[in-house]
Image (cartoon, rainbow, N blue to C red):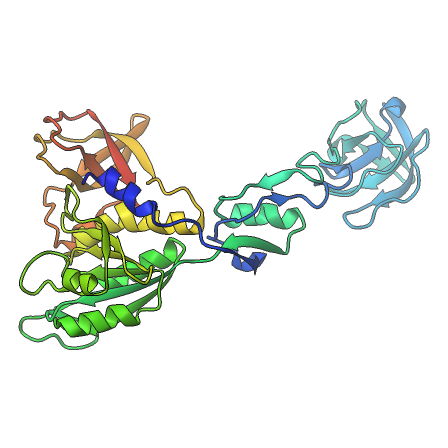
Length: 394
């Protein structure tokens, strides 16, 4: 199955989860299950954009009598009459009768008189509703909250928002060769680098994740771990192929799996599979090599989580120019770890020379996956390619 067809088959089994109301301050990263409308206008009153003097434009230029002050949170309650001015500060309400603000640098005060230059109606003021008006839809259903959107919802008067429930994901790592730090590995064992990273990925992508560890390469143990996982999705790492010690498929079949994807024409990650267990839980089988697992997590697990949380499931793709030639690709779609730079007004993708699926160092350095389509011809330096952008700290 192609990558696109496999992703569509998986996402088709992940409709948006029910909504729940959460405090706005805890909503960062969550996906809205409702439209957010403004409770009132912003700003709710016409106010000054500068420190200065509130005046009537028809009274300028000239010397005006200072009759009061308007500060943020404490407006001038009178009405500005002919020949009058009030001191005003940024964000303060424009007094009734005033229609412009003269900035303080352009005015000269002498006791209760202030001399101002010519002003025009609307100078240095912000009209009520300039940002938005009461009832305006500010954020739509399916929008992911970030700090800037959270600020917008707060300015709209919202203390809570309705968001889709987070999917619950159980990560099951199998393999006699796997141990978890700080345990001391035996002579033929390695540290588990896949499951811990996948747990963090799931949480960053909007899920609740738990890690099931210490599962031995025994069919009964794998079946018991799968059966006991309280989750919407079980993600297995390793054991997805057909070797003598690959027990994940057998365990899944004993739990009545109905396959939606049995393997994918992708490099790395061909053994990846997906299905629905008899009790309705979903199961995603990822390869054991870390790079293979991480590539397939980006291609399939991240879109699955997005679909469950109500967000668009399509990967975040961009176009870049190749930094060096690439030979023709084979029959499987190849997603190469690459480093991005910016030059001559666009992105440049430099694929790493060694794409071995066991190399964690390469994945840690990469900030994109470069897509090589099935049977793609050789490409020259400077050719345009598609890249999937990875979420990197910097």
